[in-house]
Image 1 (cartoon, rainbow, N blue to C red):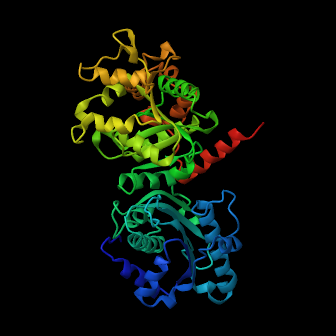
Image 2: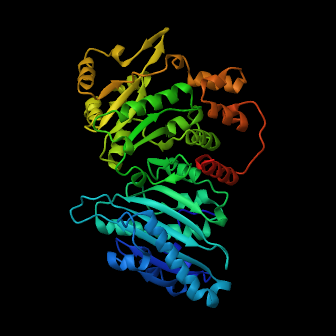
Image 3: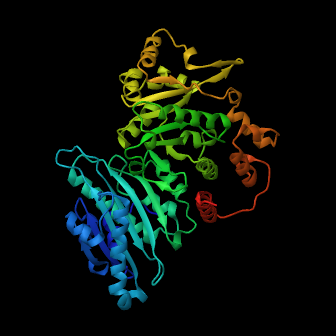
Length: 492
């Protein structure tokens, strides 16, 4: 049973007194705070086989190997640490303790706040562990951003989340959702954020990491999460490091021909920009939590997975976020990359952006939001719409007199640009209209969506399409999707 009132010291003590649990700690950066909490709780000899910290790069490389990227606070370094320390446990203690012990190796590689307080403090934390003696191991890996303004507070937060992770791995493993929720016990999002989580291993075979990542956003542990076109969970700052990012936001339920046209032509126009390296462009479809809720109620997790599956099958990277306002999304992207970013919007989105009512809570109103939204490295690409039988572009866009000069300023300074090469035949397509046709089983909707999307909707009875489908467990679905991705990428 989950009890969020169990304190960090009580968690560490319970583990120390559980004679089945025994392992090692390897912590690089911001001290050895997790191990220290087990020492301070008492009875640590029952839990700790070894603690270490290879701060020096030469020592670290000698123990764990050299990173090709030359970076040390990366997931690949964490995995090497977990593998090395866990293999040493098995090699040295399996014969003596193996039949009665569930081994674990805990590791982190972290860069905390520097003396000048000018860096982005973040780190990778992981636990490799058994749930029963002599069984296969599991991994739970997370990425965190530390937000405290003092180094010692960041160290403390790392220690707390480390204890929470180990405790959750052993006592909440049968309920991954509870494990995720427990990671922030005794912490708040203003101190530390978790923007990626990954479960692996035989005891988590049925866990869908996309759902676990959705829980991070839904619970407020982070404001955004990312999935690759292969459906795998990505860590945003690593996946988008030194990339040009092009984003299109929408409900995408389902992806229609008009939205695909927006993406494809938006990408083409973005790549043609003088200050964009087309080899570094990442195109993303973004779903906000608001757009994942049906009638402002709870999020339908199956519906979420259906949308992600379809977008990934079309080669899209997918982001889910809690950024309702565009300027907040841009501020987030600016933290991930210093290169130029683009946003593809339709006319209704542009009208939303220029609605002053959305910025009344800001001291500087719409001008304050636009200072971020239209920063030096951001540009909007506007797709036309069909109104009263006529094509309506951003050249026809009209605003109240007090806002018109602001709009013209942005046009003249190349911050807003119409998407010129578009398919007029798609402009009549309405996402809501297509969804109604699908749910009613009405003929003709297949022509309004990409062929692959229509095939998936029919085969899997998605979005209320009236048919019957054989139930396949989530874990098996994920494996089948991964196998299909590999098959599609393999030359015939």
